Structures are given as C-alpha cells and as structure tokens.
Length: 529
Image (tube, rainbow, N blue to C red; front, side, top):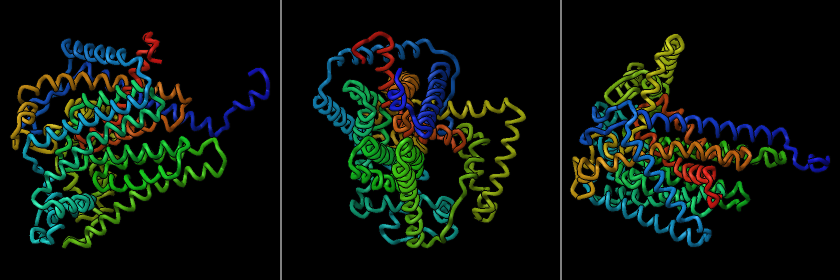
C-alpha cells in the first residue's frame, strides 16, 4: 500500500470498522465462554445416575478422570484420521451425496428411537397436549376456574400458542396423533443435519469440513432422541436454522426470494418453541449489520429487515395467544412476567439443580393476584436485592458456576429424562429404548457424549476465532456464535434445565467442524487448507 490510490481503495469506512469490531468482539466473547466450558468439562462432569427420574438423578463430580481424558484424546485422533482420509475430497456433488446419506442415517436413528418406545407427554407437556386435544374436540369441561389447566394457561399463556400448533396433528391423526408428532420430530432430526451442513458451506467451508459437521451430528445422539419429545425442542431449531441459512444466502448476494425461508419458518418456530426467539434475535443482529459500510439505502434496508424479522414472529405469537383465548373458556392473561422466572433462576436451589424450578415464580405471580405488572415490580425488586448480595459477597458467584455446570455439562441434555420420569423406562418397549435407558448402551454412550462435549466446546471456540480471522470480523460469520452466546447468557439467569441448552449446543456443531479443520492446519496438516 505504498501509493495513495491503493490506500484509498482499501481503507475501511467508520461503519465498516465498527461492524468489524462488533464481529470480532462477538467471536472473542463466544470463544472465551466455549474455552471455559471445555476446561470445565475436563475437570468436572455431570453423571446421570438414575434415568427413571430427573429428580435426584444427577451428580456433579469434580476432578480429572484419566479414562475420560484418554477417551477425548482417542475421539480427537479418530476424527483427525477421518479428516485425513477425506483430504482429497473436493467434489461438492459427491459431498452432497454423502451428506444426504448421513441425513438418511440420522432419520433412521430417529425412527428407531421413536418406534422403540411408547410415546407419552409428561408434566407440562401433558398439560399442553391435553389442551390441544380440547381445542380439537371442543370439549373444555376440564377447564373450570378451579382446575390446574385453567391456572396453568393463566400463568403461561404462551403455551396456548403451542397448543394451537399441536392441534392440527390431533385433528388429522386422531388416536395416532402422538405417534405422528414424534414422526414430525424424526423428520426434524435430518432436517437439522442438512441445515447445519448448508450453513457451514455458506461459511466457506470445504467439502470435508461439511462432512465432519455431518459426522458430529450423527455422534450427538440426543438429536434423534429428541424426536419423541412432546414439545418443539427439536423442530424449532430445524426451522430457525433453515431460516438463518436463507438470510445468509440473501446477505451474500442471493435473490430476495431466500428471505421467504426466515419469514415463513421463524413464526412457526416461535409457536412451536418460544426460546427460538434467541436465535431469531441473533439473525436480526446479523441482518442489521449487513448494511454497515455500504450506502445509506443499504444500511436502512438492513435495519428494516432486522426489525421485520423480529416483529413478524412476535406478532404471530401474540396473535396466536389472542386466538387461543378467544377459543377457550379461560380469561385472557398476559401471564407471569419473565422477571419472576429470572428471580427464581438466580437464587433457588432444588433437586433440579441451582436455579431449578421450585414454584416460587408461580407463587409470586398469584400472590400478586395474577397481576403481571405488580408481579413484575415485585420480581424486579427481588432481583435487585439478590444482585446486591452477589456484589457484596463474591463467593456467591459459585452459585452461577454450579448452575452453568449443571446445564452445560449434562452429556444427554436431558434427552433421556426430558421433563419428568424417563419415557424410556416408563414406556420402553424396544431394544434401543431399553439399551440406552440404563441398559447395555447407557454407560458407553454417556462416556462418548462426555468426550464429545469437550471436543465441541474446544473446537467451536477455535471455529469462532477462525471465522473472525478469515472474514475480518464479519458479523454474518458469527451468526451461530452470537446465537450460542445469547443462549448462554439467557440460561445463566433463567430456570435451570439442560434441555433448554440443547438447541444452542446443536448450533455449535458447524463451528466445531471449522475449528477442528483449522486446528489440523495449525498442527501442520497442509491438506487442511
């Protein structure tokens, strides 16, 4: 850049510099958290001791386990060997066929899991499913003002929108609706795998990185296991990932028609699983930054696009709630404020873990006469009091360390226990359900999943930094890292459940593939370039 002309051509505008700074900051923040989780997974582990119940079925053990450390090394070596075997692969069409084969295998695993057990909804799932049945039949006799269902939907009105999402399955399939729902989940498993591989390709990954992403999806067995879960925990990530892929294609010069994916799938994802909003917010951040450094018109376009991508799903969810209350004999309610759950999440301690559900959020809402505004004021006051406690007594931070470990170090992410008694034990009828539900496969699969946790956390951290270096801090390249970091912060204060972390771990798999290939290159594997 010795001549002035070249300097002018390569100089970044202030907005471009700001966007690069934000992208780099996002990469480093996500990487620091991921490296911390990788270290934690080496010195502590969460054992699932009893798959018959979630309560008192976990134990956090601290201390380096040499056998598990060896298993991590073996897993890393095997994946490195696989990557070396694939080093000559540069045919995208052949890669697409192999990825399609992996998707078929993922679908087969999900079907095997679904048909190896008797599907049934437990706890909250049962409450929402029964409401969906009532919506389909028009029989609301069970929803008197003194019933649990009446209280539940007054407290959690957003679940009404989910019941509306489930209703068509019951109308179409009748007594086979639960099985049909689980088949919907089974389809979502390979859909997730394909979306993740497409996204990593948009990141500029070569064929073998795409295949490594597919292999990591297959190794993470909770993905097909969540097919039978009677919530949108698996379908929603599949929908938002494809929506995110559509946005990436548009940002990178694709046709505006790619925006149909997020505008159609994001509202459906929010109806199926409200926490999908976290990923949608990450997408909105990417969309907003897509116009930085360009003309004022493009900058405005990015900001408008981001606003619409968030406003449409939120509006659809609110409309869904209004439609729900218009059809049921339950008065309209704005429900328990999120601050009440946050208050519970930063101080409660139950056998569900630090910050686990203890009923205090519900009690606060009803102690304030089911008044959302009054309950929110009380919750905010309580949050302030606990925050002051943490500021004056740093040792209390230990609570959040334990909470993080309880959620992010569970190798199953509650895929066996879900939201209550294990469906594998209570309704297991096939070999796979019996083998994984405490049988012959339980211990070895749990050990491999623990090694996979360390692998994904470590190399996903490398992946975020590799993306930063490769793209110069482009925000779009940090989509998955931003979504993960947002989920991490959210779960730090929200109700403790490792299944809430499941979607965000899935988002890390492409980053882990990118990071591992980058690490191989750093280690001297020239074919990794």
